[in-house]
Each structure stands twice: as structure tokens, then as C-alpha cells.
Image (tube, rainbow, N blue to C red; front, top):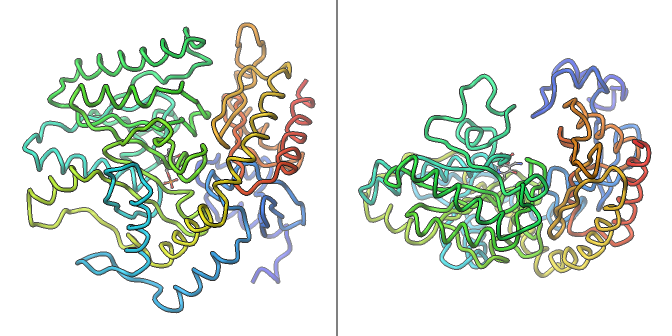
Length: 451
Ligand code: PMP
């Protein structure tokens, strides 16, 4: 069908029929869809032949770059052999079992059980459900309140959107639910004592303690956080923050759910960001880099003691699941992606090119519009301001994100531009130092155009 359509008509068809996730319905009118046709390594080509460098790995997921033939082969092979197998009723497929075993050998120690989902939102929802099941199993059914962070993002399903603390995900739905609470984010740039790591860490811990005291420790089930807050604007807490959180959760008798949907799979250097802090959460949610965007899949990891308690409590089925849990094609993709990360040298390259990323991020710090530069591994952002001394926001108008996004696109680079004038970067771990330079040269051009 596409052969009979002109480029223009694809854009018209998009405007008339396709609803885009997390986008203004009127964006169609502003600039029309950017219709992507093919990808190769770090590069994307649209239907008009425009080539752009992708500094955002799709949506922080294509960590191994586009055009990895071995993944295509793995998927095709599995599709021919067995395209679908349910996980219900104790059926399974070989790739799902192998992926579960390989992944749990790599997660922080003690996270030996995995539930496969279709993506990040379902991983978070599943974590909430299993946490409540756990507290029922150990005879503490009142523990069902959750605490999360302002600026956090945990998906757009109802439960995940409630744990999220971004207003446009709540609007119209009376979210968060009454069992969902938020405390201040460890946002160093906008924190009154942001220059002092220990003070930033202490402020989250005391906010958590106060919130638990307010709700009642016998009612709070878990604290949920991202190691680095992605969709809130790549907010990087100080080193040691997550470890302090782990200790506080233990002290307060609540579980820790770490959402590694963005930070997992080498994005910040190690396979999981928890590793760098020596933290083992009780639950860890992942998606994106698990299959590097080549197939939809998420994974929820559960600690042994939780699994055992749920198993001991009842022989009855746990009422939670979905048609595509452990999908064999996604699992086959996941196995090959995992091989590329480790034996294919992708993780190692990510760490190597991370040095060029850091150098270019540091260099852009002196630009007159750049108020803050924050990063870890290959995840980072710059925050634009109107005044570097007062940190006055760059623009009051929330459409600045859209405008920056258009500007970067026009300059041949895809980055994530947020409504608070933050430009986020998450290039594939396969990026070369030269490609990193192209990204930053182009971003520099955009910034200069704004002067
Ligand atoms: N948690 C986090 C931390 C995320 O960044 C995202 C997606 N950006 C989600 C959950 C939801 O994942 P998905 O879009 O795959 O449902």
C-alpha cells in the first residue's frame, strides 16, 4: 500500500487517523508527523530521505543501535519455529525460560525470579500487585500505601500514572489514588542545598521518614523510585542516594521498588544502576533496553524472600497475568540483545564512549543558556535557563519542549526536549566518539540559534 502513497499522503493519513502517545492532538497541525522509514546504527532516515542522528536511542531503548541483523535472525527463527506460547497454566517456551535464567544470573544478588510483561507500565503495575499480594501473604493486609517521588515517571497505565508525579498524567482522573503519595525529588540543581550531596540525601530520607510517620508504618507497603529520574527531566541524584534509601526502607519496614526501565541494561554504565550503589531492591522493573526496542517486552524482578512468602501462603493461582507474558519472539530477541551487550562488546563500548559524552557535556556547560549539566553513563540532560545566576526558567511557555524538538530535528539530531527546557540525551551504547561529536556539534548549533 505504501508504494501507492506519496509522502504527503502518509502525513495526511497520520493526521486523520493515528493517535500518538503522549503528544498534543494538535501537533499534527503544527508540523505534521515525522515519518521514519529506516534506521542504521545511530542514524534514522525519514520518508523524504532526511537523515538524522538519533541521540535518544528511539525512546531510551534502542541501546544496541538500528540494523542489528543477528537480532532480526533470532526473531525470524523463533517466529518460524513457535511464534506464540502462553505462559498461563504453567506452559512456557524455551527462550522465555532461558532469558529468565540468564537475566537473573546478572541482576543484583537475591533477585532470582522474573515476571515478563509487555513493557514498563505493565512491569510497574505488576510490581504493585505483587507487593500487595506479598503483604497479604505474610498477614499484613493493611500495608498497601505507596510512596514515590515528585518528577517521577512510572508509566501511563492507571496505577503507574498515579505513581508518576507529572501533572499531565494525572489531569482529569483524580490521580494519584488515595494510596499513592509523593515526596520531594532529590533535584540538586533546584534544591536549596543542591551543592551539598549529603544535605540532598538527608532531605529525601527525612521526607520519607516523615511521610511514613504521617501515613503509619503499618500501612506503608513500599517506596518506589527511579535511580535517575528520566521523563521528569533526567534528574541525577547524588552518589550514595539510592543506598541511603535502601537503608531507610529497611529501617522503616517498607519494601523498595526500583524502576530501572530507563537506567537498566547499561544506560548508566553497569548493567543496572542499582549495581553501582551496591543496592538490591525487593522489586526491580525493567523494559526498553531489555529487547533494545526490537520487540516489546518488560521484566519485573522479585526478591527470593518475597517469592517464597507468596508461594508459601497459597497453592491457589495469583490473579495476575497477560496473554503476552514471556512472549517467545520477544524473549528470543532479549537473549540476542543480552549477548550483544556482553559478548558483542556493546556494554564496553558504552563505557568507552561515555568518556566522550562526559567531555562534550562538560564543554557545553559554559554556553550562556545552559544552567545545568547532569549525566551518568550515557544518560544526561542540559537544562536551559534565562539567567544562569538566578536560574530563572528559560521560558514560561510549556510549548518550549515542542519548539526545541523542532529545532533539533531541523538541525539533524533527535534529542528529547522537555517542557521545562531540558534537552535529554540517551544515545545508543554503540555510538562512536565521532558520532558523539556530530550530536554535540548539532546541539551547539541549536543553542546558538536561540541566543
Ligand atoms: N517507568 C519508567 C522509569 C519509564 O521511563 C517508563 C517509560 N518511559 C515506564 C515506566 C513505562 O514504560 P512503557 O512506556 O514501556 O510502558
